[in-house]
Length: 206
Image 1 (cartoon, one colour):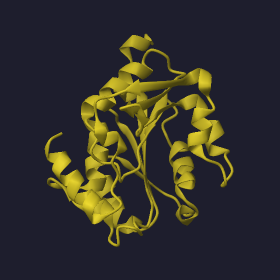
Image 2 (cartoon, one colour; image 1 turned 180 degrees about the vertical axis):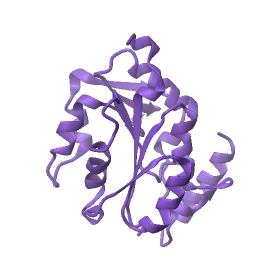
Image 3 (cartoon, helix red, strand yellow; image 1 turned 60 degrees about the vertical axis):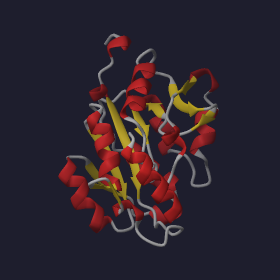
Image 4 (cartoon, one colour; image 1 turned 180 degrees about the horizontal axis):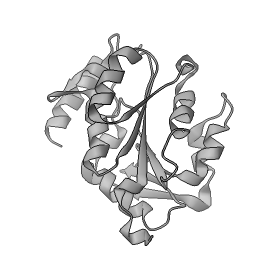
């Protein structure tokens, strides 16, 4: 395959969605952005950019999320160890991506207001070399979602519970590309009601 012609369907997306939303004091994944719950907005972001293999890792409230995930055509994977932290969900999702995928986006479900053009520019950057880790930056600050080459999956799935994925990615200095994007949404998550209000407003302007 010519790298410059990389189709989005050659990639996957992993969406960790197993957490408790404890700081929000309500289940934020079902809060609505526009006409859709947050979980569906994030799934549709990737699907709208041509990515067909989308894995949502569930845990807490999986019975509420799974029907929504299935309705979109994404895959739902349950992480029984979700209380141990997000790394276990990332590992569960990475272990289930398509064997044909060249790499995967990693986007926690509570970072939902990323512009489709940002995903598209990261795909184009990855298309220059399938071995590179592409990390978006806004005003020199790294954010989500990183685009991770499939060759790193064995390292990710074998990490110990006390390990840090960010440190693993940053350690790959020869394969790390920081890609500037004009999208503050890569830095914005939902932890409080105030965050939700701000993101609702931003979502209207995507």
